[in-house]
Length: 440
Image (cartoon, rainbow, N blue to C red):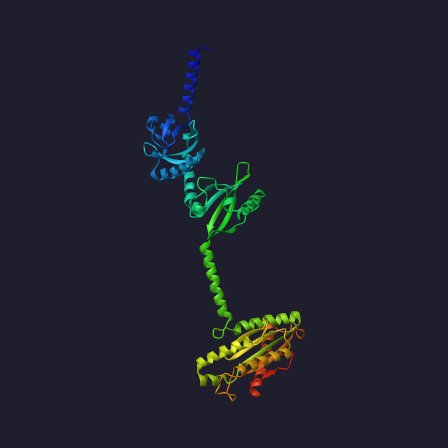
C-alpha cells in the first residue's frame, strides 16, 4: 500500500473516530492533573448547552451549582489522591440556559512516562430522568444523622455517610481502604456470622456493640447482586449511648426506691412489708424441704416511758442501737431481722427448731442487757427487751391446708401471744409458744 493510501486510510479512521465521539449519547472528555478540561467531544453542547471550546481550561465544578460543586469536588479529590479509576459518580450540572442536567461520570487515570498522574479520561452520561431520584436518595443517605455503611465480603468499607465518618473519626486510616477486620477485630466475627446467615436466607439479628466510649445498636441487611448472591452488608449504626445512660440512671433510681421500699428509714433494717413477703417465701421453702422455721418477735420494754423520759430523739437513737445489736447477735446469713412496727422487731430463722430459736432469742436478750443503756422509767434502770418465740414444722402442714399468708399470719400470732406472755410475766425474758404449729 502506498504512503498516500495509508495516509488517506488513517485520515478516514480518525474522521470515523471523531464521528463516533461527537455523535453518540455520551460526552467524552479529558482533564489534566488539576481537573481542567484539555479536550471535549461535541456532545457537551447537547448536555451543557456550550460548545467544546468554552469548556477547555475550565473544571467540571465550574458547571455545577455551588453546593453540588463542593460535594463532587470532595468525592473527586479522594479519587485523585488514590489515583484510581471511578464510575457512577452522579452529579448535577447547570446548562447555559439555567436548567439542570444530571450526569453520571466515569473515568480512568492517565499517567506520564514517569508514572505520575497527569489527568483523567472519561465520559458523562445524561441520566436526568433517573438522576434526580438517585441524587435525592444519595442526599438522604449522606445527610441522615444515623451512621450507615456497606461492607463487602472481604470486610472492606465500600460506602459510608457523614455520620459513619464521624463515628470512625481519626481511628480510620486516611487515603487507604478501611478493613473492618483490622479496625474492629473484636467484632468482625459478628459480621462474618451475618454473611453466613444471609447466605442461608435467615433473618439477621440486631446487636449492641461498644465503640470506644459510645454504645451502638447495629442492624445488618444483606446486599445482593443481580444473581441474588450476597455481596455485602448494609449496616445501620444507631447511637444508643444516651439511652443506656438514662437506663442506668433509672436502674439506680429503682434500686434506691427498692431500698426504701424494703427497708426501714430509721434503723436500716428490713421493714414489715418486706418481711411479710420474706416469711411467706420461707414458709414455702420449709414445707417443700421439710425443715423447721422459727420466728422471734421482740419488743423493747417500757419504750413509751423511755420516750416520755428521755425524749423522742433519744428514742430514735435507742431503736438504732437495738437494731444494730440484733443484727450482730451471731445470726446466720440466711436469718432476717426487721423493724416490724414501733418498738417491735421480727427475726426469721429458717431451718431452726424451737430449742435453737430459744437459744438465739436468749443471746439477743442478753446482748441488749449487756448494753446497760440507762432507762430511768424501767424498774431495772436500764434497757431490756421481751421476746416471744414460735416454730413451724414443715412436715406438719401441707400447702393445701391454708393460704400461705394465713399460715404466716398464724405463726406471727403465736409469737405475739408468747411475747404477750413474756410481758405479763414481768418482761426482760424469752417465752415460747410451746407449739410446733397450731391454727389460731
